[in-house]
Image: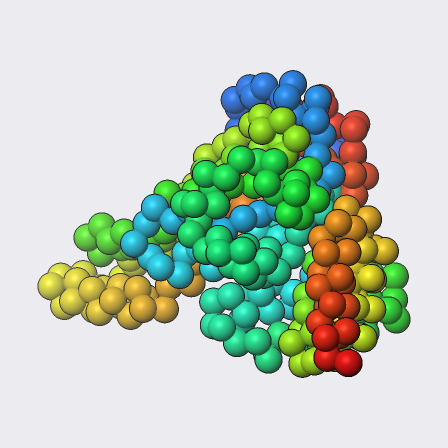
Length: 119
Length: 216
């Protein structure tokens, strides 16, 4: 009888605790570490490999990309001068999160303008 | 009976770990339900200059995990700087509608860092971060939600008695001060800030979207 009580108590406690820490909606990997590298350490290079490997993991599994991942990676490509792939990743952010449409379109337009000037 | 008492005590402790009792008015929030939130650089009222960028690297996951599209904070920072907006004080004064024009964001989160410090009390130290959060609707300029959240961590003062012990502690505290990592504290504060019953209702990417009103 006491065992049953204890079992109920334990499962109830576990339920309450799990209510505090639900399964994450997105796969975060080292995304925030890469933001820290860029914004606190002013290091733009270190984060690139981290984002690249996150994207590879997301594409080979059912993991979900967090908001901003594709856009940030797109910006890294843009910085390197790889405009075509940069645009592809900004498009990907827009496709994954339609809320980003206006901002992504603005950025893509800026890159296209720059591309035309280059030609 | 004793068992029952211990049991209820345990449950109430667990419950209080998740909730704080304070009723907020969510009518403005429910009337405008944002899908996307842009977090602009935090206004720093402390002397710790790295507080703003460290805070920026701790806000995306806790906010997005509540179900919202969070605009990339690094790109947000760069875009604002491109427009000559590099002062948080200036950015926080802008009409909220500017963030709809610039980003297409439904809401803007304005954060003020109120405390970001290590406090020494005799032989122990305590690391504290405290923020004020204000979420504004970019269509109406209305405040949809606001909250203060503090998170503190004691780095204990166990061991060594006497003067020698105090000296050791003082040296340890000095070493700790150099390497104080506020990032996990900021992250914990952000996580707590957005949880029910005084946090943000679930957003569109959350399974409880539009069905968690009873929690607030």
